[in-house]
Length: 193
Image (tube, rainbow, N blue to C red):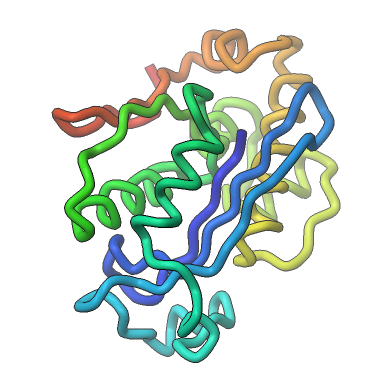
């Protein structure tokens, strides 16, 4: 399962878009995506962020707030681990948005396709478009949550193939990368061992 967030500004609590894509093997099974109305105090849309993802305050006026979105995300994710490209960012958005909304930190296991890519390919940059290209993935609409989540899922599949393994556990072992974890005490990052 791959996840991607976009934020309205530099605050990690300012989630304004999210997408989650569930894959089984190499095939997409289902997805969930929504715009999000950031919480008061975190709802300023900075020009820099809007220039990146194109989402404006007017786009999210009728969008659900974080507590409703988190409830749906939590149900969609269940006990599954998640992956993201630059997962440190995406998991910090979960922590920040939950904190701003007064929601307890979740227990979640995650892997970072960026960290794994550094153990897989020699590239001059490890941005999602560059890694997708190295993995042979056609990728457009960068910084659209749905496109980025799908690309991260496909990158994970390519990384598994490159390492000759079938599971995320096998991939992490081959790449010498540890699982990241969110929990009530804080978090441990997904990083090279």
